[in-house]
Image 1 (spheres, rainbow, N blue to C red):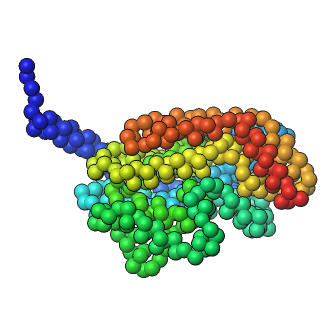
Image 2 (image 1 turned 30 degrees about the vertical axis):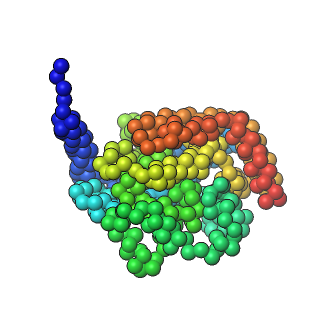
Image 3 (image 1 turned 90 degrees about the vertical axis):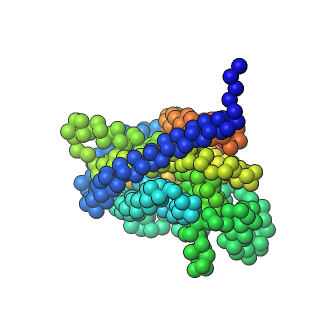
Length: 461
């Protein structure tokens, strides 16, 4: 009987590992080359510079189902011009969230890149992350410019200025993140702690052998005595309160494994965006095929999906493959990685929206405030009582809007389950996305809306 020596087995394993490493190095190289040769960012920038709302005001920017309040009694009773306005405001709201996510990407690309530079041998990846960071600056600027001009035209300057300035809004913003660790601490301690220093000390103690890999970007912030930039909106803003965000930043910038793990979070943002943005991409293709007028925001979405396809490939490659290049995660690294994804499910993928079809979140009071402002705006011109009555009828009973969101929710859930299936350090609750799955319940969403609406109605009475 023929036997295989341990040396031969080790050699075969090493060859297989080298082959797998070569595969993802090749993919990163190919993605980087394709990205730098493309002109999608330049097209997005040019479209943003030349955007004129009056030229685009009479056209749908996507299929009607991607409209604020689509499928609700409010939408069904709306005039053609009101429906188009709701379609435009959905684009604005969606890309306001995208801009917030990409602002966070700008930060964390630099944080994780600093670790890969310290590791060495990942020069092409570092160049790709630097390229992405530059591209995100142009994306954010374009989304903000188009969004502002659209809101100004539809809602008016006064409403635009005051929409989100109330004390009530600010208090709701603080209440939005439930069950986080920092919320369990006494208020005096919350206010007195230097959170950046506290979390930096904690991470250094938990990762004592990783000193040589600490991100140069974070080290420079420390040297300048500057805090890590916080995010109030977007996925990072919803993931954790401002006090806790440095905890994740210092972890993601302190070891090769953690730097790779950040890209599981980024992939969730990539997949969530693609789940909706592909509809704009397809709408662009249909208009182009029929030689019809293509609204500028539709074209921006089209080229943004193409630009982001490179970023998504990088997120997937780092998160699923690159982490295997390094030492297996410690118990601490596994715990924090799983905690982050669990919190992502709990705080970001926690429901189905009726106000914003396709959004996998509950219609919390903050969304209801925006809905109320739209109904009170010149678009609908409702009184306070009329707006509240219409909202109650539309948000607190089953309608088509919930079912549209459920369709997008199930598609995103399937995508994320496929993605996480090959990541070996995850808890089953994260690999199977159980919290997100449990949120796919229209009856539960309606009951949550009834509760939130009662709270909201009292605040504006």
